[in-house]
Length: 321
Image (tube, rainbow, N blue to C red; front, side, top):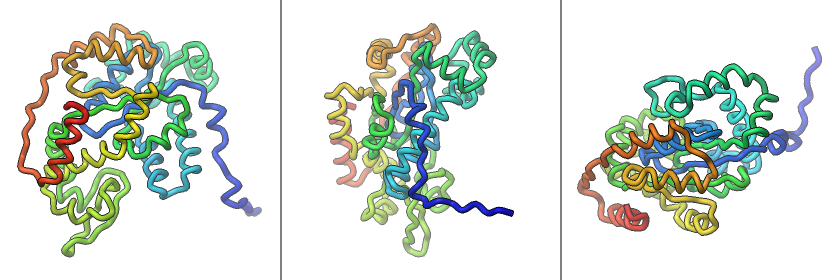
């Protein structure tokens, strides 16, 4: 039996994506529990817009490339290939949630007529290209916790536009705490498929999230659960402040606060439609009604480490939260 003699690893590349990346994209970024899913569902209700809700592979490739776990060039090639593939699958309705109870369910974003038409009319990659050429669609990627690597995303997805969603740090922290994401149990036995650092503290092996600074593992462990959630929020927002500010000036990013989204939904949505050059549908109105009737959670401020509290206050004031 003949054995394949593989070429040197440096000879290989993912060379198809640049040719296939011929469609419009936008990215929603922000911390967990900031309102990204709600906003993504609203935007996804627009004509010829597909909302791709938290594609794990796109997030992981961005993280492992940004963290230098793999070479950046290779990471960009893989990321662009994944995006072209997931947009192809999305057009063919192979990736969306059809569960009516899911917040991002396709039934809440698209009409029954469009769903049936795309399920029956579009079958192949050629059909996808015909759809792109005819309708100039926008593919919206909803990505969490990638703000530290915006340069990588923007270099990879040329021409993409960003929407940065921000919510009051104490509201985010309470939601995260109730989820138990940064409890001792989760840090000792994590279930989220993300990069971790193994760190032994007082004989206990902790799996420290990648966004904890390399000299702050012990500090993070010593925080109570609520403080860990606030620290997460700060670590997610702070690294991108200058970059987001520059992109806003260049017209390549738009900041949306959760409070704006639920208190001035129609006006904010109109601005987003102008920014992304998209058109609402009757489904958009249904989602607007639900969002605009949502009440803001009461903000509980528990006792917090002084330095951490200063960081949170600064960010809340910076974004007028």
